[in-house]
Length: 182
Image (tube, rainbow, N blue to C red; front, side, top):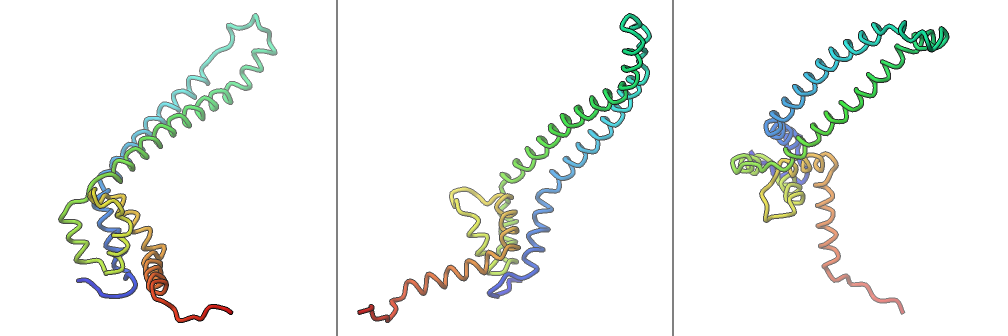
């Protein structure tokens, strides 16, 4: 049901959002599972690491002196929590890299002909114009990234900007009857 309006309609954004959700659902589920498993495993390991730190006995270091042993016992929890924080940052870095990698992979994924056919019948003319504007390399198929950018541009008012640019082109293309200054 294609609407013939000058501005994209609310259903355009909803249709694109639902289509993108279907196309990216697997990636989102995989990322969520990986993050959850990593967090659970790391939580168990950090508890073990902190318990190990609590269990260290510095009694064998009596040659260093009583004050040194007291200092080691006093700052022992801080050291192990610093190790936990450092490891957490390293793990977060790798998990973030994994998520970004899967996002890039999904953005490059080609959209099926059936999906594009459905969108071409359901989207309004201004929304299709935004999709054409986003899809600038016509030698390659439309990707999920193109659809994501189309949704972003629709939300940012790109359809109105395209219409305004077309009006400007029409105005500049016409000769204007203005006498030159004398």
